[in-house]
Image (cartoon, rainbow, N blue to C red):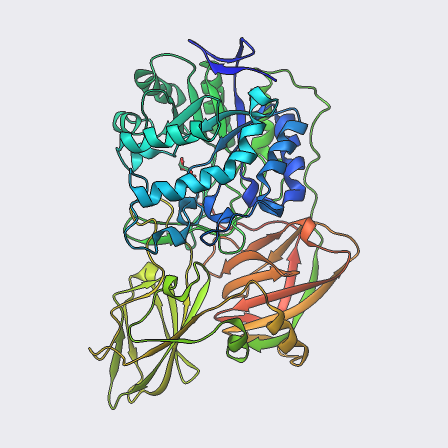
Length: 587
Ligand code: GLA
């Protein structure tokens, strides 16, 4: 058992000044069998603490559920941190930003239409209360004063960039204390006077988030946090990527210098990210400051450990900086990356989506076009159908498309409505008659700013030549179990070299032993990939990302299954390559 507190000048661990040298590692972005390896490599770089957010919506995909198993076993993660002799910082949100879908807030929270998030509002606070009480048995006994690793808990996240409701912050603090958290609480804000003022209340130790100009930013923070230790709670050493933009990297030398400046000034740090991991499945967030920009699958972040957990040049540079501030043994270092196995496979069966939709959901009828939320799912895909009978030219319109709609008429593609192009209407072939079908993709919920919590799907009113279609049939696709696809695939072997979407391609590959793999997605259009039933994420020919990371624990010795849902068009060849290809950089 130890005592951790905030002193007049320093953090104090059992009465002694303690500098926090922390690295961010999100358990929900890394396979659980790899947690310990990543944590050890953080210690070997010179860090003494691991920081993680808690992604509420990952634990609570539906109202009333709370999952702490497998990759969501936060207790096991914190125990791994402790077993490596490190401390932990936990940031349970409830809002986390983090380029994570909806900034961590569950989509079901918004279905009432009346909830007011991130402020003093009863519906929201009742849900937050239930959430924090689910976390209590995990966090409370793992605090430092109970013999556990947790030394700090952060309240909210960059709240000053969003709101200014001190009553809300006070109620959050009271709730966190009420569930039994006894460690010091912090707030984090970007270092501007307004944000530092609005993002915190007395009793919360203010910290800042930034990735450059360390001394200037610390000076601003000092004006708002006149006493106690200075801490950069998010030292941004890299950045995230959007589809259709470049892959972000930062200069190793500049990042190392900024870290050195920070530590030289006596500050504590949480390096964001130490190891980024992956936005697997449908978990990526998005930005929308006028243009919708969904995040790519990789959360490599140009961090010291790359997406596959290998040390980069930044790792060694940061280790060298940290060695000036903490004792490090020369021989206690991780191995360098080696190339991943290079081999080919093939999608040997093609199953058109239309052949299996009846097994992936249930059609329901609606008078007005429903949102995905009204279809009872909060991620992935939905299908919409309506009957049309137009004599001449016709135009299909929606108020908004969130986020991408593939429109077809009697099974033949007509066009795409893309939210990132602000598309809202489409001309149909003249004399359109028959079944109009729309495959709708939710490309990830906005995680920053006022658009958090917005509904997904086709946003009405819908119009065909200015009139609302009489009726819609719609269903959300449940892609959590692809056994219907497997069953259909066994009867659909093919030699074709191309796959016309929307369709599933099913294949297999054989390995002697599990190993990290990089699946090339060049030559594929847009879609998602499942390895042995696990959705490893989205791909898109737009890039910048052109490989998907397959963590070794997903790969079996022997036969492995690959299923691809291709929305556009793809080759049926499958290529595994030696190294990740996260795409072109700015320069
Ligand atoms: C802010 C947020 C983080 C993350 C970073 C950018 O600092 O607090 O959650 O979104 O920006 O990566």
